[in-house]
Length: 367
Ligand code: NAD
Image (cartoon, rainbow, N blue to C red; front, side, top):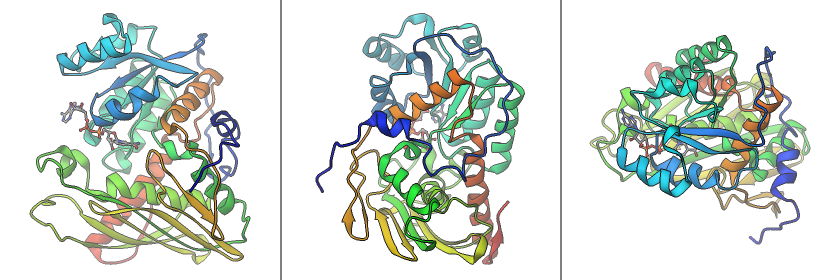
């Protein structure tokens, strides 16, 4: 599909709150000292594949923030990143001296890009160091941890947001508008799937339950749970799930493919699936007076979609740049992010209920 450049990235950032009313339940904030800087400084914690391939490069395109510092346990990465991104030595930390970041006025925001089992610890440490925090998805190992993270940030009077980049992506923002504003009437059904065929290191943290919390559901399924929630604009109440394991020797500890039905208020039931053994990325919505879909729906680029069979004409943007700029703006304006910690918590409540349903074989209530 040929994409039109009719709308600029800035247009989408500006109109970013369209259709998100139902999700934007921002708790009141105490005001904190707002940084008086042209661009806020971000420090990335964990320089693995997402930081290296996406966040570092995206920070070359941000307008409200820049890559001011890094936290890494690997000295060779410190040297390479310092050179590549011109990061001064005083802004480079490791996991032993992390807490000293509290004294560094160059760093306003800490972005936690670590394996899931480390999200809670580093989000809380970051807030206690007086920094605002972005934490990658899935927010934590379970909903209980998410609640602790939200409470710690609130206590430290610091903003917390989750790396939900698709809330800033034009095609996904369009499905939020279509669904939440009932443009084609009420939603009758949604089916969504996300997954990839995992053939990486069999010893990676992603395949260890204690480190990742789970498999394809934690890593890929949260996008589908998000997709259904932000298209409908309401919170699901119950879920029933089943699973399939075709490569049990590889996925010894974590789920491979999970299927679920998600019940929303007024009895609307959506279907979703996540996988480490299938290449999926789509959302299909059927409404009273038509239908719309995304496919690919959840990647970093090449997002595509249609409404009643006609192509959507939106540009591809650097989602991570839009997401980080929005958070920097929130910090400057003392305003909750549209993807605050509460968004991550809501998804983890669904994930927890899916795992309970896989155990019980029954419908489980969410929350
Ligand atoms: P990765 O394995 O490539 O990187 C993890 C980093 O953490 C590495 O640099 C590693 O050295 C470091 N680390 C520090 N202590 C560690 C420990 N005890 N064990 C293992 N690693 C340790 O992972 P990634 O793909 O960069 O993912 C990091 C986070 O980002 C995850 O939460 C993941 O879900 C998330 N992510 C989000 C997106 C997105 O689109 N929003 C995409 C990819 C990854």
